[in-house]
Amino acid sequence: HLKNDLFSAFRDEIQAQILKPLQDAIVEDDMSGSLVMGPNLPGGGVKLHKFEIKPFKTTASSVVKLLARPERVALTILDKLGVRFVTKSLFDSFSTIKILREQNMMSFAHVIPDQSNNTLYPINLFMEVMEDLQKQAEFGLEISNDEIREKLNQRLEEQASRAKFLEKGNEFSGPEYRFLKFINRKLITVNIGEGENKRAFRFFYPFEVQIMDQETYNRNLAGPMAHDEYKNRQRKKARERVMGDHLL
Image (tube, rainbow, N blue to C red):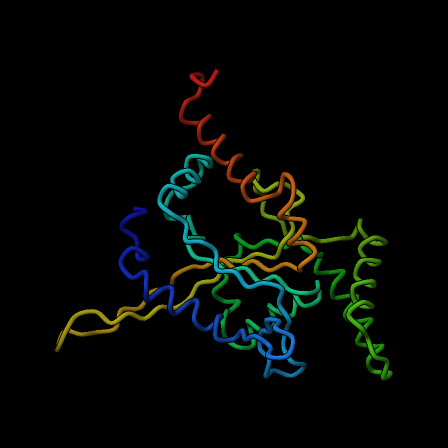
C-alpha cells in the first residue's frame, strides 16, 4: 500500500497544489529580512520565525511508525506531507489559522477532527483574553505584543484548572511537546489520458499543518522532546514488537 498509493502516482501534482499556495502567501520583508505571511492583508499579516516543509515521510519511516503502533494501518498515515509555521508570538500562532482559513488555503470542513491537537494554549482562556483586549481597544487603548503575551501567561497561571486543551495522545511525543496541529484535505486535480481520452481526475489528499510560536519551538527542540529522541522512542517500540523476548 505504501508504494502504491496516490502520492506514489501523482507526487509532483500533489506537492505543487498543496505547497505552492502556502509558499506564495509568504514573502521576505525587504527592510527587516523577516518572513511575513499575508503582507497585503489588513494589519500587515503575520511575521514568521520559520516556515518549514517537513521532509517527505519515506517508506522506511512509515513502516517503523506502523510497527510502533499496532492499531495503525497504511491507510491511516496522513502526514506524508506537512508544513510547520513558527510564529514570532503566541497570538500570531492563532492568527495564522485565521489567515489560512480566510485565504482559502484550508477549510474547516476538510479537517479530519480526530487528528487535531492543541497543546499550545487552551482555546477557552485564549478567547477570554481576546474579549478583554477587544474591550480595551474599543476605548482607544493601544495593545502591544508584550501586553498580549503577559495577559495570556497571566490568565493561564491563574486559571490553569479551567484550561481546555485538545490533546490527541501520542506516547512518543511526550506531554511537554506543545503545538497546534491538524490534518487538512486538499482537493487535487490531475489531468490523465491523452487526446479525446484526456480527462480530469480529482481526489482529496491529506497534509499536516503544525503551528507554534518561536519560544515553544525552541523548547520543543531541546531535551527529551527533540525530534531525534522522538524517533528513537518510536524505533525502540517497533523493535520490541518485532523481536519480543529475543531482545532480552
